[in-house]
Each structure stands twice: as C-alpha cells, then as structure tokens.
Image (cartoon, rainbow, N blue to C red):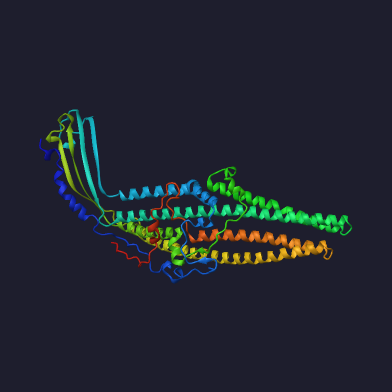
Length: 510
C-alpha cells in the first residue's frame, strides 16, 4: 500500500503557510491606549503634592521597604512573617493563579485542533437508505478516523479575547499588590498601636506614682498639723481618677496584639516576647520621602488595577464586534468506514478536506452587546478617574493630617517642659508652706494631663506616618518578600501600565 493512500491528507500540508497568512488579517474593535481626557493626564495629577511640610517630607521616591526606615528588627521580622502567612495574601495568590489559567485558556482558543475516533458495532443497516430494496445482512461494522481543523482569527475576535484576559490578569496582579501593601501597613499600624498603648500606660503609671507621692506628703503634713483632711481627699480623688485610666490603655494593648496575631495567623500568646515588651514608639528619624503626583499615580496599585480594568473593557468591545462576523475554519479528515473484516482495505478508505464558514447573522441583540461593551468602557474610564482623584485626595489629606499632628505634638512637648518646671516649683513652695495644696494639686494635675497628651499625640503622629505610607502606595515592588505564590517580576513594567498616550481609535464594525 502506498503512503499517500494510507495518509491521504498529506497533500494538504502545503496549505499551512496559507493558513498562517490568512490568520490575523484584521482586528476589529478599538486599539487600546489611555484616553487623552483621562484625569491622570491632567496637570493636577502631575503637580507636586499639596499639604506636604518640607521639614517633615522630601521629594525623593518612596522606598520599596519603607518600614525599614524605623530601623526596628522586631518590626522587620513581623512584616516578613506576615508576607508569608497572611490569609489575605493567600487569597490574592489564588486569585492570580486562577486569572493566569484563564489567560492560558484564552490563548488556546482558535488555531489547530484535532480529534481521533474509533467505533465498532454489529448492526442491521437499512437497505432503502442506499436505494436498495433487498434486506441487507447483519454485519460487523467499523469506523476509524482522524480529523484536524484550523480556525482563522480573520477579524481578531480571539486576539481581543486574549487582550482582555491579559488585562484582567494584570488587574488581578495589581489587586494582589494592593493587598500586600495593605497587610504591611496593617502590621506596622498594629505594632505601633501596641507600643503606643504600652508607652501611654507607662506614662499613666508614672503620673499615678507621682500623685501618690503627693498624697503621702499631704497625709504627713496633716498628721503634723500643717495640712487638713480635705487636701488628702482631693489627692486621693486624683489618684482614683488616674487609676481609672489604666484599664483603657491595657485594653488598647490587647486589641493591638489581637490584630497583630490575626495578621500573622498566630495565637496572641504566640507573639514574639519583644513585641509584648515594646513600650517605646518606633521612630523615623528622617523626612518621609513622598515623591510627586505622577510618581504616586504610577506607584499606587489601585490606580494600576483601575487602568487595567479599562484596558480589559476596551478589548471586550472588539470581542463583541467580532461576534458580528463569520467564523472561518479549514479542516481535513481521513479514515476507514465499512465492514470490520475489510478494514483497512482501499474500498473502506475515506478522506475529505475543505473550508467551513459559520455566520450567525447579527440578530438577537448582537449589536446591542457591542453598545453594552462600549458603555462598559465608559464606566471603566469614569471609575479610573475616580480612583485617581481618590489617590490624590487620600495622599494630600494624610500629608496635611501628619503635618498638623506633628505641629501639635511639638507644641505639647513645649507645654510639657513648662508644666514640669511649674509642678516642681509649686511643689517646693508647698512643702515650704508658701503655696496651698490646691495650687500643688492643680500643677500636678496639669503635668500628668500634659504627659498623657504628649504620649497620645506622639502615638497619633506614628499612626499618621503609617497611613501616609499606605496612601503613597509603597511596598508592593519587593520580590524576595512576596506572598506565597505571588511574585513581583512585573515591578519594572507595572509603573508603565499607566502611560501618557493618545485616545483609543476604533475600527468600524459591519
């Protein structure tokens, strides 16, 4: 038997270059580029950030590992652990894996496909279907064959589907980056809250000890005939008031520890001893680098996520437009069909090849789906603009808050110095009998209240710093400390996902 007879579709192989040439003749739908009217191209999005205090911030870019500016090894270890074990990051990793598989499915559409079949049966065939009028004998029948086909993406519907899937994957990747910087900020914030509450508790305990000393002195003076019982009672009231504040700080410490334990997927009792022992606020001893508006918008993951969603919506216009055009494929098949005992003789051989055109005429809302996709892209652009405005508002608000709270903390520290001097001088005069107990009590009360205010103000400044870094969007670029399953090789190109580009141009549909 000759090879050409056993494989009758071999003469079709020269048609493969023609198939490749026909594939990709045109691509319907708009070619995506960032619209000129997008707010990210406006001057307000590229100007220096407002609300920044030059004594507290600098124009340098935000470092990728901004939490290391605290120079706190305990905090560094907590962040590293959270990036490996946090449940939100595990969800982000799973979502990214799912999106990448969907992209693989989209890329596999069209092109070559094939199948093989084999069937054996014992059957009584109808004679009349062959225009015979005598009963056919019962026989063993066989059908064996293979077929291949190639779907041409002449109008780019499949390519637009791949573009949409690619943009969706990049959007999910940006969402994972957003989850990462949020987890980092939450860890740092919980650690700062724990240390701040412990410091405020320590200050409150020192104030309580000071007030108790005053009460002991008033008792001794009363017993010596130089004081009276109302002075002692007033002092005891102040002691009770200060004592009542202690549970509040203890509860804040516990709440911060619970938050930190949840972020690390640990039990609160399993937190590192150094965390539980922290009673001093971590400090950043340099101006915070904030960059400018353009750098902010290229860095923030939520801006990239919204921009990629806009790109996906634009690509889906092409998918909907491509549905208006026919689907064209070319196929070939070969095999043997006949009496089982005669297979594979020449009388049982069969082969065929030819084109297949499938065109669903634009009915049943096909054009409406195109208009729906176009409207979805308008919605995506509006959302993108909204995210840009939100990013600017959040950053500038946090800059202004940080500046005002820092100024307040500075003023309170000056007030604390004055209150301490006044309390010391008043107490000396009281012991010498030249000032009343009321004056001494008021001076002591002012000192303890100011100490508490300074500790609370410094804690708020530390929280403001964390909120500012979160608004600036730094921390997703790291590779070595990525969450499980979520790597960041796209860091170099992610910032380019929001380019300065011309408006989209659309190809006409039928």
